[in-house]
Length: 220
Length: 394
Image (cartoon, rainbow over all chains, first blue to last red; front, side):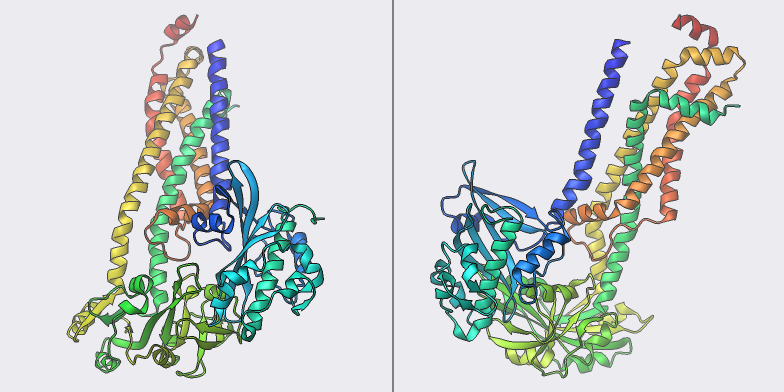
């Protein structure tokens, strides 16, 4: 009788394990496979460059569907001003967030967004410390003959230290305002659309990181 | 009066975990088998659909460069070879030819794509002939070019989505910095057209500074002999002829290895499941030896016992088989994703197509093989001697 009991318990354990494995295979894996979005072309190379001092990173996927759904999307669109800064992503499209680590300690994030530019979609990445301050801005893709001026590292460095607070006194839709963002000069005045596109992308980036719960401080 | 089915059902419920594990084994083998059959059917259908979506069955291109798209990706415009447009006059003379279209593939280096730059590909097509080759293309916004030399572009759905373009927006051809106005965005087709940017042929020729083309697409008349046409086209100077029936055969050969691998897995899964069935039923018979002995003393014939045990096998295989088919049907999308990750080439659309006929066939195979596996335990049960069994247990 005791042997039969042991066998039954063993069978129960096996069937439970099997169910867990089956659940993981069919429900967890497809989500990971389906993850697409604005990714770094070569994160192994790009993350250390965008975040000096990092020793590694973890890739996370987050979407409105996996957070608070349509309610959160609506809130983000409201903060972005939906007339001018469309998100271009339905509810279930995951955003890629690279959590940057030093040893085992989390030290910041790298996150990118797509933003409509003059001649194509711009891919704007920022590396952020845990307080949401920009450590580096990187234009992975931008179209147009003046694109090189925006990709110039000198232009990117002007954004170091910028945070969501700086957008309180600057409107990326009109390009008008005061403070640090207003002081950043457009390196290609002929391509005003692309300059504003970068500003809007930066705001979108910071808002998304706040609303997805990665940044401290300003998230309601 | 209690039926044999009810007795068999109650017997199976006595050892729930063991029955569940056996069921899972049968379900998995049924799942793998029906998915494999669905894949065999779905892959070929998807491949045919992709080839039909090309719009033409034969392509003529410059000799020595049959893989234009690959060259485009690896070397950009530099490695491409061209053919004279005048060759078209010789081709249209052939009686097998229904329609033709001139295509120019061109690639430009975009230094602002990533750190190392990237290649941006463009498809130069004639507004007069190309749409007729692909009547299934529908516009999400806008329409085809206004004329063959307009500085305009039509974008596939995914290309437009990536570049975040709508009709009226501009795109810039990198390297040469020529702006083009987006006049149309195609609906999603699930084919390579989704990621393509179409430009009027003459415009692309002007931008690239060449007056030749890379490909002539030929739509063959219905029931025409494609092989005969291919042989005639080979007589043209310095051309390579690629027929999509050849392409299909090559791809199907590539896929044959993957199919064989999955078939082997299905066979192994069925064998494992059937060993599980034999084990479960045999264990059940041995544990119930005394009961079977009593049944026999009460008048049950060996045939009755045989049928009773065989019914248990039938119930197990039937339930597991049905569950496997249902899972395969509902998770066909997941199977599709997994299969795509391992295949060297996966056409657009569903790769796993499961229908009722296929489901019944699978169920039939599982039940027949299951019943064969149940023969030995049922025979063993039938030949149990009542007095011996009662005595041995006491």
